[in-house]
Image 1 (cartoon, rainbow, N blue to C red):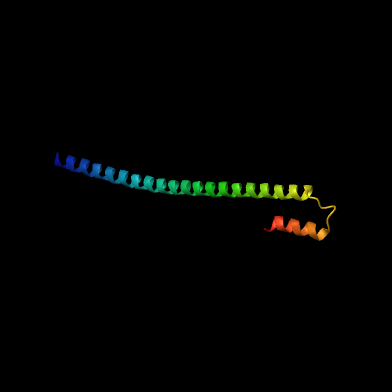
Image 2: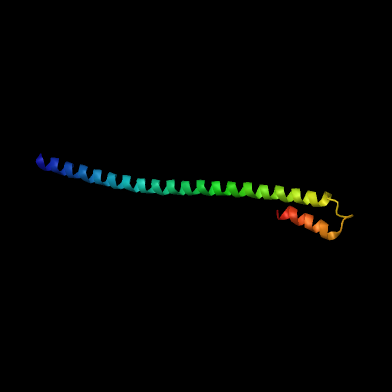
Length: 91
């Protein structure tokens, strides 16, 4: 009877150790997955900022293009036209 109790106690201890090891493995995989998700979130934020900056730059470039197309450049000396354009491009 005592041998059976010792056997089942040892078996239960081995099972508990196995479950503890499996739990630690699962926790490490969870930590790795959480780190990967955090990296993706940061990358998405960086990408959104870059997209906003690019849209702003394109909008500003289109405004400069529109200004240069509609500005009166045919009846003024070329140097005045270019200096005006340079002031628009490099304030």
